[in-house]
Length: 224
View 1 (cartoon, rainbow, N blue to C red):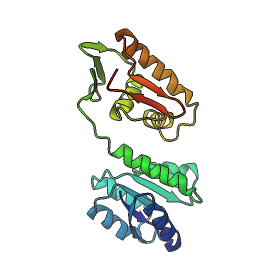
View 2: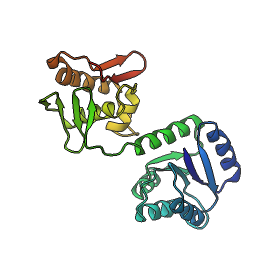
View 3: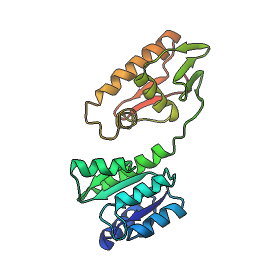
View 4: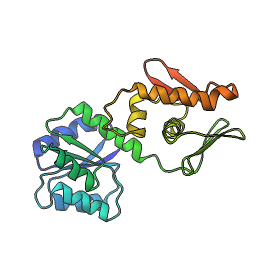
């Protein structure tokens, strides 16, 4: 995974580059906003870590410039400014996530990997899992020839599972995708929607396609 880090603290950047290399990231580093924007627009990166307080251009301006140029590369803002208005400004300029210093390296890595995963999910006309057909564009699904009517949230949970069919998807993954990464409610809400899906896409058809993997999450199986 290629990552661009725009951070003027050389010591912090060095530590992060070393640690992230061990997590599978190939990290390019620049220390000012103007060079960061040029590099971001000229290189193909999976994710960008962007400090707010930068020489040349601040992080907000860099992010706004990226989005104005049509770049959809995920951006994580990394900054010592953690007030709610600072967070709001970062997100409004086009950032996908925001992490305040000091931060946990484990949390940073997890958020970066989540951003890369989400950015890799392109809108797909049809997701086919066995005889279950899911159409993300039209928000419709079928079991065989029978259309199954779902609520918007039920459909979002199903699409999350269908995009990673035959893989384990955790409750946290589902909550972050269907609600957002700042969801702080009870993760048991995911169980409620999974139960509803089972009643609609499995039980009437004698199937058990949504499997619970105890202690891990759920798997939508292509073999019912």
